[in-house]
Image (tube, rainbow over all chains, first blue to last red; front, side):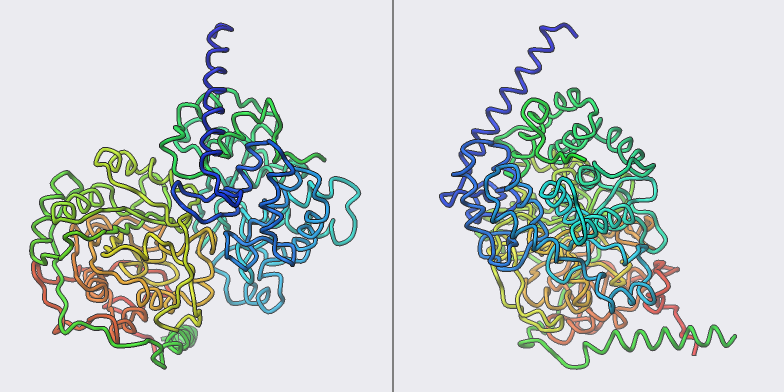
Amino acid sequence: MTPRASSAKTGRMDTLLNRLHASLDARRLPCGGWPFLRGSIQMALEPTCLALMALRLDRTANAQVLLNAQCPDGSWGSFAADDEASGLTGLALLTLNALGMFQCAATRAADWLLDAKGREANWPWNWKFRITDTHVRFDPDKFGWPWEPAGCSWVVPTAFALLGLKQSFPCCRKGKIANRIQRGADMLQDRACPKGGWNAGNGVVYGTRMAPHVDATAIALLALRTEPKSRLIHRSLRWLEYQAGSCPAAWSLAWSILALDAYDLPVLPLQRRLVNVVEPHETCDAATLAVVALALDCTVASNPFEVVA
Amino acid sequence: MTSRAGLGGSLGTAARTANSLPFLVPRYDCDRRPARSRVAILPVTEYSEKLSDVLWKGLELFNPSVTGKSVLLKPNLVDYVPGAAINTHPLLIVAAAECFRRLGAKRVTVAEGPGHQRDTQLVLRATALEQHLKEQRIRFVDLNRDDVVKVRLRAGYSRLKHLWLPRTALEADFIVSMPKVKTHHWSGVTLSMKNMFGVVPGVKYGWPKNLLHWRGIQQSIVDLAATVPIHFVIADAIVCMEGNGPLTGTARRLDRIVLSDDPVAADATCARLMGLVPERVHHITETAKFLGNMLFDRIEQLAAAVVPPRASFETLPEFEHLCSNYRAEV
């Protein structure tokens, strides 16, 4: 490709990025947060976190909505009026880390995450999964974080919790912190699909291999970025690269870009594909718009899902 | 019979007895059963544009009153695995939308919250449903991400008092459950009532909606069916799934679609068409006590008769007792 053609493509990416930012701005609720769907009025945690990171503007003012929504125990609910801890509390911590300057709220969130765990971590359930409930293949000693209180560990909440904690404690991890992060990382590796990649939570059910999902694989790989390179990570990266090449959906493709970028793999061809896959005014979901915006400028600005060893 | 087989049979019987315990005491608010229910089994051998005509003729048998109403079509879209008969076929969904528009519906919306895949757009695109909906200008709502409202449940089998449910489903005047007829590794079968797990929002309960599993799948199906009314059923039983459903089973043809104005009658009929015994499926027997009709003499068959297959649908060993030819080893 000639430099001129290349610059034209980059220009299309910039144009789309501007439209995505404008679209996100327009969908912002008076409370400062975002709902998932266009026309909705209920602030939801996931689009709010992703949009705050995507807009990367006026950090102090933007973060207020997250600070207001934090529960007294340090967790966040999934949406306005939800008074139970959400499995996306890790994402909220990660967002505070990206916005910076909110040490107190971030510490409370990290403390909550250090204490939270999937149901299989409790001994009666641990024994149940070892002895009677064995249709789903997993090691209950390796536990992560649940979607909602008292649930089992699942891949996406665990990956976000790990990302939040790893960013909050980038070095010199000891004792409880080191153990909790290690357990979470072990859980992700235990629940992987047999040929690499991750789906919602388990690789084998009733003896049958489950197929991985693109977005869950990408988010899990982001969380495992600082773990020793293993065959599983290598195979999962290869699988993700292959799937991203033909992925028809903006959400999954954007997450793939963010994960591959974190592993220093080339993403420009995928970013160009992403431009053709997404149309802001046809996309109902603000979380998708935000993650697409993050994927388009992750190589120029920064990748907020990156963790350093 | 060996002593080991005898022990296995006894354990299986004990497990089934334990599973029926939550249903010993009725936990519903009132008896809402119609005096009689209507079902139409329509022979269809392929997914094509002709589905619309077949469905229209079938709906004429019922003449559902939807004029000026908002109709919500709730298909079964769980995940996308190439070549697998997991989801309600897009052509059936679009045909249903077309028919309800012709019947005078004020608005037809297709809405679903996939239980396994977080990327709903991926499922819509990969199955080509998105393109069909676009061409026909049919609105789609992702129920996993819709605004939610806290709702008191109208039955108490799961011991959950409330669930957060999506506003779009709660505000619809007429809900059509459009299941893919499948066996299911946790609930035995997944039909029109189990299909309603898709209205439980992932934004609150995650992917999959694990809370419902912990509270008992059969119990949760009953509570949800009691709370979110299903006004009509259009079941995709053309290519179904047997074995380790709902995701990794084997395709099995029944070459039919099943219509009904009663979800209990629809599910009982679908189970019979699968060669299974609805009286052995807990959520069907329990809802037959207060929501709808399961017995032959309370179901009027408007089209073809119920003809069970020569061989029952294959199930996992835990659900072998659902098969009509099952004999307990006791």
